[in-house]
Length: 206
Ligand code: AP5
Image (cartoon, rainbow, N blue to C red):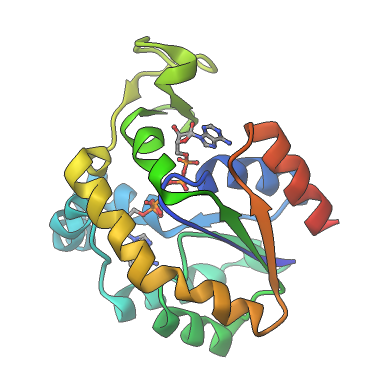
């Protein structure tokens, strides 16, 4: 199955993607993770996009589309994919329809004013990549799952978060209508505990 997780920054796309990918046995492809991995490794791509990502703006469309197209042509995507963070605007969605149109699009819906708190309190694990929130783990510096070191994402500062939410409102939110008009949209209330959000998604993907 080809699935897109659509939602604002902090709506829980990465958190749910990890659960879905395991359950459906399809690869979780996050354009944000691909970009951050390139920044970490200091590749040419990473150097080109670091400032854009830190500021909370979108990376160039054609570059992003090319990356996704190449990734989806790899053998592990033969039975489907779970896209997280792509497409991000109508231009990218139209391009995706041209080479690997999704079967279902899951919107993680949550009032945007709740997201600044989620993002500025997020902690990620460098080792197992799990994501946590300080509301649940307090100020600990080690991962509750594997003991790895926890870090704060560069773009989780209040200024970048504001910009990311603006970009979502202006460029990504119109995709809700785009996919609804194709009859592919399923809306999940993401303002609930993680397990309950996942239960809702599971029903949609049955
Ligand atoms: P990307 O990595 O895609 O980031 P994002 O969309 O801003 O989303 P996040 O990863 O911040 O949030 P999430 O929805 O995954 O939430 P999470 O599960 O972590 O993109 C980063 C940047 O890359 C972009 O700004 C752009 O520059 C570039 N980029 C990426 N794709 C691009 C594209 N297609 N085109 C152009 N540029 C692109 O959860 C957040 C927090 O909430 C965590 O702390 C988590 O523990 C907690 N949480 C999750 N679920 C719940 C819940 N149900 N209840 C309570 N807390 C919860």
